Every structure is written in structure tokens, then in C-alpha cells.
Image (cartoon, rainbow, N blue to C red; front, side, top):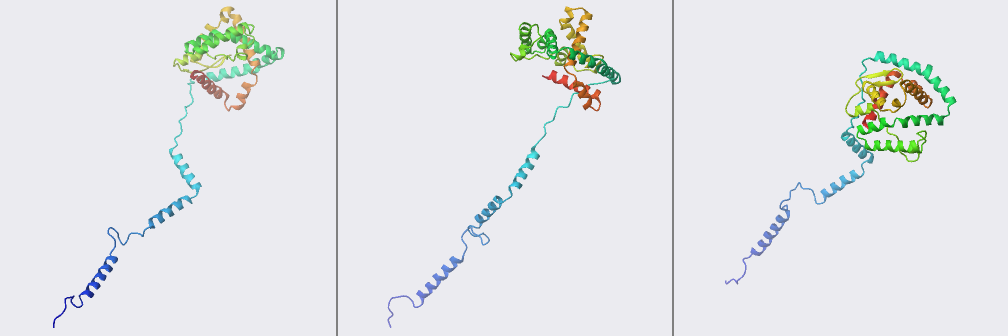
Amino acid sequence: MIVGRGRTPGTGGGRVVATALLLIAICACPARGASASDPAPGAEAVSVAGQETGEAGKDPGAVSQDAGDSALEDFEPTPSKPPVRVADPIEPVNRAIFVFNDRLYFWLLKPVARGYAFVVPEALRIGIRNALTNVAMPVRLVNSLLQGKGRGAGRELARFTINTTIGMGGLFDPAKTGWGIAASDEDTGQTLGTYGLGHGAYLVLPFLGPSSLRDAAGLGGDAFLNPVNYMVDFRTAVAIRAGKAVNDVSLQIGEYEDIKAAAVDPYLAIRDGYVQHREGKVAR
């Protein structure tokens, strides 16, 4: 029996089955580089979005507190300059002179100043103070130059010229009221401090009050530069000095009393206040 050309029976069906099994195997295998433990697509995005939502919902106060804590950790306080101290090796003597000056003020100077203020109008007392300040111009001029303060020296020359002429010998102060030129507050004690000389030791001078070794020496320089000491004899100069003290106190009654009333120990309060005040003038 002759069989016609064709495929062997069952061969076509086997190939179909084999092809189907191969396709199933390919579909069941994971993709290259992928793992069964990898999250499904989009899971990471969902997680990130959740975290962002949580941060957005965080209490703003907590965020501010965290920022504040960080700022406090980074903050470093600026060290303040310690107050200047002065040696006081003869404190018992200084305290005794302080008591003397205190009683001199309350028992003599203040009553005289009150009577003087009752008789002499305030405008005239201010004029006397202005005139004595104007005459002492060389003290401020020379010390301004010695301290290298050229503008201060120029102000003193301008003030002296204006006040001596327009201000009627210095009784009025048109340089300040009309031109805004204020007086320089310079003396020999400040000049010595500018050159690095310290106070040395604290002193309380009879009649004059708080001072130091440096400033007491400076008083000699101021007296040398003050023209009043060359215009009159010694006794008249002392009388002018005493009159100036009474005139100044008459314009300042109550200031010393306020300092004493506010201080636990007036001696220490005045000593420390004087040292800081003078240090501030030297540092200008």
C-alpha cells in the first residue's frame, strides 16, 4: 500500500502542545532583574507621598520649637566688658574725708547755696557759670590738642570767639544755642588716661570730693592752664573757686541727696560711679 507524502500521524498535535507549554513557562517566569520581593509598581510613590503628607500635617509649633532649640544651641552670648576697678588702699582715711565733705555740704555749702539762690536769679547764676567756663577755655583747648582731638580744639576756639563777643564776655552761650557748638569736656586727668596712665589709687580730697592719684595730678595741670590764676592773686583765685562751688551747687541742689538715698553704701556708690564716669570720658 502506497502512503501519500505528508506528516507523520500525531506529529502536528505534539508540536502544538509543546508550543503552548513553552508560552506558559515564559509567562510564569519573573522579568530579568526583578525579584519576587520587589514592591509593586507605584508602591514607593505612594509611600513617599504619605511621608510628605505627614510632614505637611506636622504641628507648625513643633517645627518652630525645633528651629528655636537649634538657634539657642548656636547662640553664643557676647562677653560684656567688666567694670573698671580702682585700688583703695587708704579706704579708712578716704571714708573719714568723705564724712567730712558730706557734713560740709549739708551743714555749710547747701544752706549757703540755698540763700544765694534765693537772692540771685537763676538766669544770672547760669550766666556766671557760662562766664567761668568761657574763661577756662585754654584748659579744654590744650588737652584736646594733646589727645589728638583737632575738631574738639576747633570747637573751643569757635566757642570762645562767639561767646566772648556776641555772648557778652561769656555770660551767654550763643555758640551752643545759636550754632549748636557744644563745649568739649577735656582736662589733664583725661589726657593722662589717654596716654595709658591708670588711676593708681582712689582718693577723696577735702572740699573737692572724689578723685584719684592720676586725676589729682591732673588738677595741677588744669590750674596751670587756667588764666584766672594769672589774672588775680592767690587769695582772689581761691575766693573765685569757692564762689564757683556755691554757684554750681545752687544749680544742682538735690542731685547728691538722690544718690545718697538710692545707695546702700554712699561711699562705695560714689567711688564706683566716679571711676566709671571718668573711664567713659577717657574712652571717648
